[in-house]
Image (cartoon, rainbow, N blue to C red; front, top):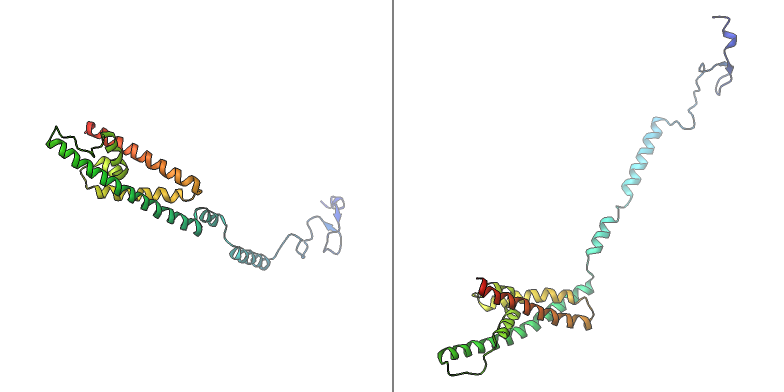
Length: 198
């Protein structure tokens, strides 16, 4: 093995004072990419502090802002709901007077077939008026007091009017009247058909 020693490649390595075989001398100076344990702990602490001070992701705030209604729009919706309910209550009061006159007329006609008093409404008009005033509760449960149907319909009209309040005035008023007419038609037909189904 002595004759093989001259054939060992030797080179000078950093930190060694003479030529030694490869691997025979280890540098005591840490390399550029090596850190001591204290340095690693300090870096980890700095990263944790930086992460702790970093503000939270704005995704949650963005989701909240998406569903948040501005105060001006909220006041507008509230005013539209109150106005819609007031208009409906006036209409419902007028309708109830007409329906009361129709009931009195029907009673007079039932008592005297030869007598044809004024104030009797056609059957189609009567059910349309009931559909507008009493709403779905009056169509499904006609035996309940009319006041319950009016209150239920007023609440529905208020909700619809609140969302229509977000539209411009020239669009919200026609839409309100059209929806009222559709409600009267739908609930009146339901009340009329339930007479034959039930």
